[in-house]
Amino acid sequence: MNAFYTVNIDGRRTDLPILKLPSGISICFFNLHGNQALTEHCGKAIAKRLQGCDIVITAESKGLQLAHVVARELGHEFYAVCRKSKKLYMQDGLQTSVQSITTGEVQTLYLSKHDADLLAGKRVAIVDDVVSTGGSLNGIEEIVRLAGGEVVCKAFVLAEGDAKNREDIVYLAAIPIITD
Image: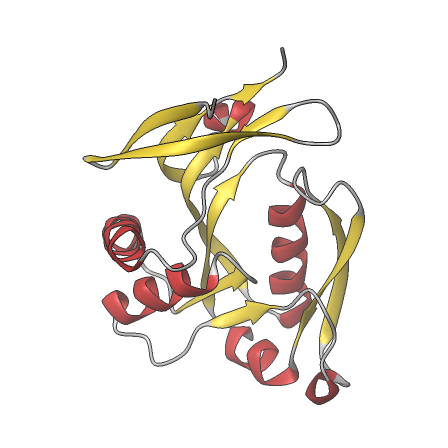
């Protein structure tokens, strides 16, 4: 039997499968990959909540299509992407290490020089699908700082667990972390 958690994301009801992680906790799995209508809905709703940013940044991979929609809605020509592996064209870019709830391991975020240059001196909005412990968020904030940008907004589709209590983020809906 599959268990689901139903969440209202800015007026759109969505059923999220509950998945048990190796750590023993369970999460409400949210996946924008391939879901064009949900991605459009969430991206447009987030864009309405962003004020005064010059550029959007996200981490691959589930934030990519979301950042694309948000940037388009804001009229931005580009958005920046923190990659989870270093590509050949990224030799003179930036990097920082993070640990997120879904990976369970330390991983490195990489930003190309092109994207770092996009952030320099700019007011930056961090956009991603889910914020939980804030590990990935901290890494993206560090990348923005290293690039010379200023984070002016941190926006997410979902705030997981205690993240809903953070006063420094914007989100569309909250979901629980299940510990039983």
